[in-house]
Image (cartoon, rainbow, N blue to C red; front, side, top):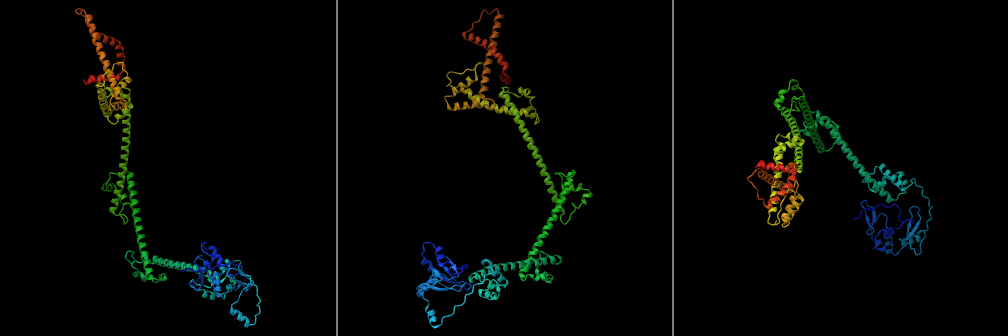
Length: 572
């Protein structure tokens, strides 16, 4: 099936017009020959009974008979040139389907019927050709608009056929004025007018239905709310019909089903509107009651610990008769208690939030105070004022004037001591483990040379000897490096070295005092004629004399060593 074509604007078969087959060949694919394109034209009948032609190759359609079909008809009858009459001037022109000329071509043969008529009948006189009257329209677009206006004035309906439309308009002077348009252009204009007119009529019909529905809804709005028998939850249109049918707007809607549907929609809208009003009244009553509770709270008569019974007992006659407190259709007695509970719950939540924020602030402050106090202990450890064996009674007076110590006392009288003890215990555990390892390392069998720490030993030499002893075992070497590099708060290797130096100084001090006593006894006793002193003792005495001053000075300048010695004495 093929759709009806759109009428071409140019006059067909005129000498100045293009040939249809030439236009078709321009649009056809290059794989087809001109002969194939010409043979592709077929004739069809549109739904409005008009003949139209369609080319299956170029997909072109037209109301004008293509020259290819005419040429094919002539070829079948043995003639090539065909005579035509120009509709505008009345002159005869000739065409073979490809060429068009006003002059009679050579070899043109008129049909036999025409020849016989010429022989039988006398020649007719030439009619006088009158010039065409000038058109009142400046363009075809203006003529098409005028033609559509004529159709509208004649009230041509969208279903009117062409023949009926032409009969209705042919007697009008505007019909003749539109002779600038061909018949095909007029039919095309009629089709466009009918399509547009059909849409307009549908819009008018829809608007009319909307106006009828609006009028019926307006009737329901005016009448039903004033009827005592009307109930939007249970009423039916049949029950309200007698009250509504007295008004002409009731019959604006012709369909009874449409009336019933509009009635149900109206009842549903009334129910929703009533529900919205009821909720609005309850919301206003609740807001007013909350305002009363807020007022009592500001006066100190209501708190997060209040109960309904205590609150009710605290009200005087003024508040009990207040419209915000009284029971109404919008607020029942149970609603009042519920609103009161919600208000108290909000107060409790606010109080809990305040307490939580206070606790958080206190915890953050206490944490900062503990960190500051721990930083103070680390500083004392770095300055060798405390060691893992330090006791609280030995250091309390030293840090009593520190701000961090006083801040910790705000958390509790025993808080500074407890935190100090935790710090020392943790440090002492690490030190004892590291000291045990270093002691075993120095006493291991691989240490053939032996290590002896004296009062004059240096920590760098001690560190080097430790690494030398641990070099025989990768695990021991790695552990030794970790101990030497771990300085939180002070390296265990340095503390152990200080202990060894302190022990060496103590031994030298004891040995010096023992020989001093021996010397005084020798001077005082007349019985001792002389004492035999061994060579080793002589060397020790010389070394002790050389280091006596060093020991005295270092003992006074090394509080950590003296403190560790005092701690050992106290432990004993």
